[in-house]
Structures are given as C-alpha cells and as structure tokens.
Amino acid sequence: HHDAIAYTCANLAKTLSIWVVAAAQLNQQGNFRGGEGALMAADQVYHLRECEKGDGALYLSLTESRYTKYMDIGTYDEPGYWIRSKGPYLEETIR
Image 1 (tube, one colour):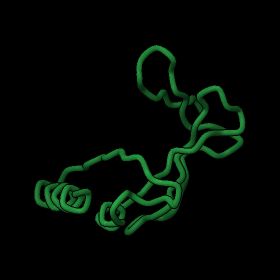
Image 2 (cartoon, rainbow, N blue to C red):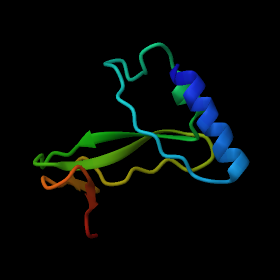
Image 3 (cartoon, rainbow, N blue to C red):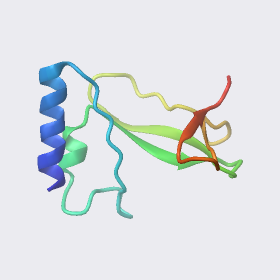
Image 4 (tube, one colour):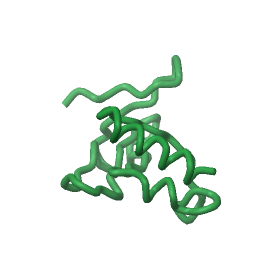
C-alpha cells in the first residue's frame, strides 16, 4: 500500500513539476511497515529528531538524498525547529 502511494506521488510530482511532502511514522528499524518502497520513491528522506535541549526542540536529519548534497536542518546541539504547544505545527528557529 505504501509503495503504491509513494510511487503515485513521485510520478505526480515529476509530471506536474511540483514538490510533494509526505510524513510517515517509521518502525524501530527505520522502515515503513510492509517494505521500503516509500523510501525508495523519495528524492530526499529526512528524519525528525529531538535535540539535546528537549522541550520541543527538533532538527531534521537528511538520511537519503538522490540529487542534492547531504545537509541537516539544525543539529543535536542547536535546533532547527520547535514544536509549539498551541497548535500542531513547527516553528523555524531564528538563526
């Protein structure tokens, strides 16, 4: 199921020249249940990770990239995002 959705989204993005951002929960081995098709269809795969500071401090770790240089958004020591308690969204930190 995840494979079919992932490849449909990848084909749409390519056909329409648009970005598609998808979020999914991974299992303990870092894979989707039922296979890695969704990871294989993506051009970039980021993992949302908690920072040392805790309290909603997060950074994005680029774990797979097909065309671009590997670069994280934030670090373990310095967050790139904060989870806000009022509403389910992330707020970018000021650098």
